[in-house]
Image 1 (tube, rainbow, N blue to C red):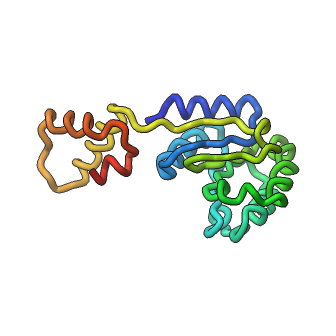
Image 2: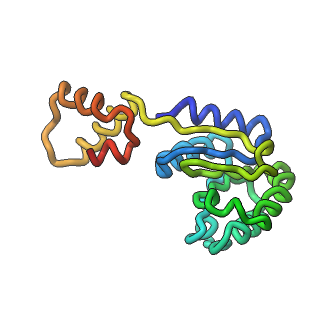
Image 3: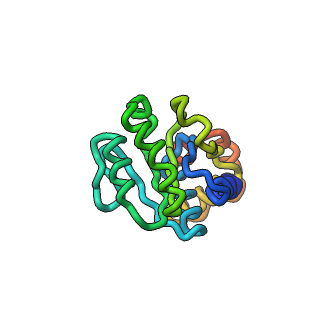
Length: 181
């Protein structure tokens, strides 16, 4: 699933990018990709959202600026995944804090990954960020997804031709849309 996207993210991080804009409508799938990338680089994956705050601690909820301040106190190698940041990039205090945080991230083997459908970075951050887009699932991804769903259900094994038809019909959809359809 999205091997090229994982490789692209891994290479950006290895080459020193400490801010990555990861565009996708599939937050859950993006987190799965980022989990694989974090494991391969011996980073801890630490998600942040405005409502839940930072990782398990919950610190830094309420605003992007507070979330970044909480990240500033985090010492171990980590990939910080900001799930709501695209809506808060107009806050000049948060943008300044993020810019100030970037050199420290490098020293601590950390990076910030913004995950959102569309990320319009402020001018101050445009040249500081790498960009990656998570492609929609391909036929192989959808086949694996549908087979997993069939294994979990109490339904009898599906006809391979039906499975192929379902995969063809779901091409161009997100994973969530494909499951619902």
